Structures are given as C-alpha cells and as structure tokens.
Length: 301
Image (cartoon, rainbow, N blue to C red; front, top):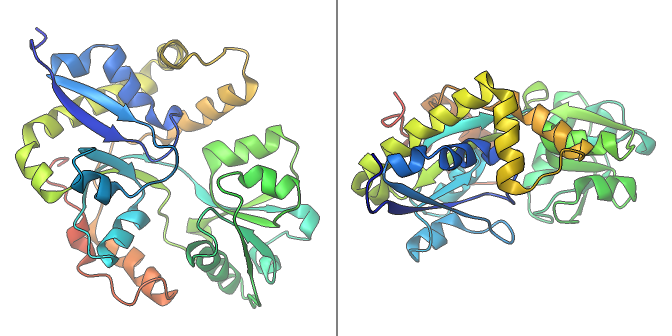
C-alpha cells in the first residue's frame, strides 16, 4: 500500500543524468519509492556545485559525490558524512598517443586537461603516476576545457585528460576515433576514488534515518534488477529518459556502466586514511581532520 503523502527527498546528482543513476530511476519507475513513502526528487546541477552549501541552505537533503570530494569538504571544515557507496568504476587518466605517450612516464612535461585547472588535483594525479613509473614529472601545464575531455584531446588542446571514467569517457573516445591510452588510478599509485557515494549532513542522518534506510533498501532492489534483468533495466532507462535505441555510443556507455554497480555499500575507514595521506603527500591538504569520521557504515551493515 502506497502511503497517502510521500515525504520529499531531494537528491543532488554529481553530474548530468546518466546511466550511473539508473538504480534511482528504476526504483521510482517501479513504484518502490512511493511504496516506501519517498517522493525522490533528482536535482541535476548545471555544473558541479558545493553540496555542503546547498544542504546548509536547505536546497537538498542528500548528494552524490566521490570520496575525494568528501575529504576535501573535511579539509574546508565542512561536516558531511558519507553513508553508502553504490557504484565503483575504473577511473584514471586518458592520454593521446599522438603526443608520444605510451606509459605514465611519458606524460612528463605534458599539458593536463581537468575541470578544476589550475587547481592542484589533476596535476597531483599525473605527477603521482609519473613518479610511480620511475619518471621525472617536469613542468606539467594545466588546461581547463571543462568536462570535455575527449574533445580537448582530439583537438590537441591537451595531451592528457584526468579524471576520466572508463565507462564513460574511454568509451566515448573510442567512438570518436581517438587513439588513446588509459592509465587507471589503482595501477599507478593513486588511491582509487572513482566511486559514487551518498553524503548528507550528520543531522540529516539522525533526523531522517528511517527514510534513508528505506532509500537504501530500494537502491539495492534497483541494482538487483540491473544485474538480474538487464533487458528490463535498459527498457526502463530508455522509457524514463527518452534515450534512443539507435544511439550506439549511449548503448555502449550503458553496457559498460551495468557492471559498475556494487552490492556492497560499505567502505573501510582505512580507505579514507589512505586517501587522506595521499592528499597530504601531494600538497593538496596540510591536514585532513579525522578522515575515518567522514564515513559511517551504520546504515549499510
């Protein structure tokens, strides 16, 4: 029986609506959210935005982000807590072979495209990979073409693009004819933070615990459907988003995303300790206060 007055829950996406968000669309389409008394509102930002500030203003209740951004919030003194991980993709750096790059050490002295340039994040990733490959980084040049990673490489505005998701930009690059080489974070000395997690204010976790428990239950059901009934999941995706069955790139991105959903929503505190150590080591932070406190498994174990 559907409750007469579902309670609104505003969920901020980390990017534009894409197959990464499929479990939420399935849960809404199948009526599971309504049955749980949740009116889930997916908020698609025009660009990456400050989830903490939006929550403080009362504009959103929960947000999707990546572990590294959660720790960066801690560094700024913000009090967000991660409580569920639902997607883990292979992420890293995509380089253009035309720039003479075959292995990470070859990225030394190259132009690095990333949305936060000239901030330190993208350069830190490439710098770490080069050192891990026994190279000498030299002077890396930051380039900011927004999230147009493939375009930046194809148009030779940059030699290297980071941070890319294998299930999205690498697939896109192949479709567009880029002769690229991909270096995964986990293979070249960088903590693997290409995971999507749910975060909220500590008070929200306390005040809306019952609703968040229900959200995670239907999120699990959505992932089960994706894994067990992929044809139905694809049909729901197309019906709810208007995606075309003839979109070859969209179909390949969908297929590459399906295996990325995880049944294990938990994360280890030691993971956040390792990520914090890398932020400090690469001068992206002087101190990360209590990194393990940024995450709780209380809702998922």
